[in-house]
Each structure stands twice: as C-alpha cells, then as structure tokens.
Length: 269
Ligand code: ARG
Image (tube, rainbow, N blue to C red):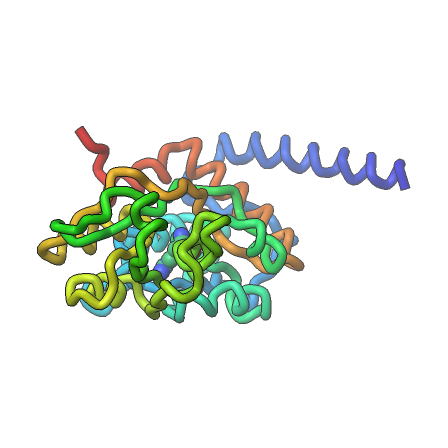
C-alpha cells in the first residue's frame, strides 16, 4: 500500500512538473492536457448558475454575462471544452451538481462546510461579503440593531444570507419567523422598497448594483460576513476538479482572473 502510494505520488509530481514545463512553453489558450477528466457531455462544460446576480452573472439582452461567465469561459477554453450555461434556481444548483446534471455550479457560490458534504469546491477565485441593505431613512444602523429589533429580513432562497439569517439569535441570525425568502435577490430588494420587509442580506457586489438601480436604499457600512467564492463540482469527478484547479491557477498566475474581476469591479479610490 505504502509503495503504491509512493508510486502514485511520484507519478503525480512528475505529472505536475511536466505540466509546469509544458505550460510555461504553451500558449495561453492551449488546453490543459488532462485526458483523465470527463464531463457529462463530451466536449462540453455544463455550468449551472442563477443569472440575476450582477456583476457575477446577469442578462445583457438575451446573453448571460459577468465575472463568473468570463472565468468559466476561460477555464473551459483551457480544458478544450465549450461552456454551456444553464440558468436555474439558485437553491437547485448544489443538488444538480451532486446528481450529475451539471458539471459545475458557478454562481458567486460561497464555500461552506455544509455544501462540502454534498459537492467538492474548486480553489476559491473571488471573495464575497454579506452586506445589509436598508432604506435610506431606516432606523437600522448596524447588524446588532437588525438582530435585536423585530425586523423582517429578506434573502435569496438557499443563499448564505438565508442560511445565516434564518439561524437562531444565539447563532447570529434572526430566526425563521423573521425571514422572507425570494427566488431572486432583486425580488427581495423590491419588497424592501415597497416596505414589506426592513432589510435585505445579500452579497455586497449585487447589493451595490441593486442599490444603484433603486432609489432610497443604502448599504450598511458594517458587513455581516466575509466569504470565498468557488466552483462546485461533483464529488466523484476529482479529475475534473484537478483540471479546473490547474486552469484557475494558470489564469490567476497570468493575471487573467484579476483583469476579469477589475473589469466588472473597478478598484475603488
Ligand atoms: N454567495 C451566496 C451563496 O453562495 C449567494 C450566491 C447567489 N448567487 C446567485 N447567482 N444568485 O449562497
């Protein structure tokens, strides 16, 4: 067993070394040569997302664009695959990846312990922050006020905002009774503008986009949590995970990921 492991480790490091030298020499667009991985449909990388989450994924006319779309396209290119995007309910993505319906879930998706029980995650490629949106004249000034008062909180169903906020007050949430769940983040924001709820907890970048698009809203300065975004991948397909991680590493090292993120989220100041 030990010997086997050692041989395996040997093969792996040789493969890594070979990978590194060939990558250094290869052109940026050349596919990662890993015959070991498979996808659901050969030649395709099927990505599940929920495309109402600017600037990570959103519609520009009929087309879905955004940070996740560009990063996933760049990864697919490296793997020699065609990216196919499926726009689905956010809370169906993990089950779909686990059930072999999608190769990846790429949706500004936060790595959580609980999700790791169902799927694997790639190396994180971005950071997210859970923020709190309130009306401009709101008496809610920070998270403690939000937790302490009898306020109604809107969230996108199945997101980390939902998971954290619907937890009990002892665990930093407001409890089930004060949660209103919506299929899309923007539906929660509309409910906030019409006074149905008192706050929305959602990722900071979409929060900024929603606040910019709706009058009379603001984001509280104290963020709720900081998170890592990564791609969800079926647990059995570790070869695909390895290939995706290798592609992400190359795209990080050559600055592609940073330039994609900067294009959509210009550095402040
Ligand atoms: N980061 C949060 C989560 O993973 C929200 C993601 C929502 N993404 C979307 N495309 N609607 O739960």
